[in-house]
Length: 221
Image 1 (cartoon, rainbow, N blue to C red):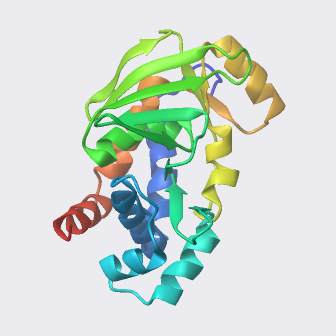
Image 2 (image 1 turned 90 degrees about the horizontal axis):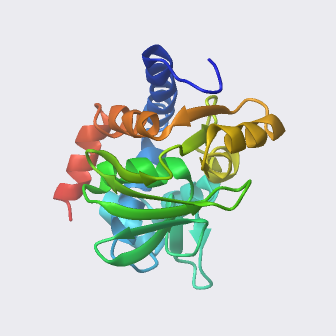
């Protein structure tokens, strides 16, 4: 795989890695999806709320949340799990409500999961240039600069502390050139186009069994 391009085969391989990760961690995946749906209300979420939604013991849910590395507020509520109420470099505005996300991958793919468009802004960590785009369930639109790309960690093996092990390395860049500088500092990363990230999200969120799980949780609202 070159640093500049991702073939269709490579794209599916990257998506398969994530899909197997989620499929192999069904309880963790369910907690993630339920937490995100509750966070969309714009307030911190108590573990008891998540436990009630999933009909699981609260202690089980709390232990999983700590294991997964979510963000907490001072009152013991979850305020970030991919989608965040606290500022990160990645601004994510949906339905005129300010949210943030943990990484470029979240920003591009969450509109598929959330079934709505998002106004996204994120800085290139090398030169500080702001990348702007509209994330939609049909793809990333109005990407500026048009040369923007994303760094990607292809070998993610666990959902535990996924922010530290995956999200923190998945950033927007204004060009392949600045992305290459970042990748040189972090061996193992690859550089992929914005649209390829969206396609990975489609392959992940719209494939069974995750698609049915999302629909089931939405039905419980």
